Image (cartoon, rainbow, N blue to C red):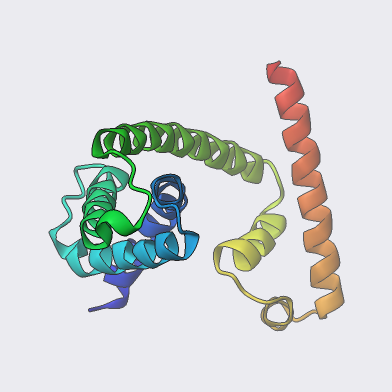
Length: 176
């Protein structure tokens, strides 16, 4: 599989993982078992990602996989565990899915606000933020790219972040 496939899956999974983890921890008593199931869900989702219809919400699709894994877990462990009624499990999953949609919308709104703030800072500052946080480059690598020293890069990025925080705070106060 190519890097694009892996990047697409990783992006989708990173937005869904937290909600799936919360769901599993709410229906599986043993946290180690919940973690094992989370790994199985991730693996199964990765293997079936080629079948995923991108017109549908990824979180809903991966919730289906998680529900299936939970049912299999309950089936395999039978009486030897505290079993949550399947109807309660379904309700929890539906509730978590609804909450995940709200979280996703909030994350999108924060991302849009950040994009707006980034547009308000100078291009050189935008470039530093892009290199450090969007391309995940190390300070020393950025320093080499820009023909400067690492300390200057650290200081500049620290000041840019402080400026963005200040701008965000001001923006939030204006909307209240």
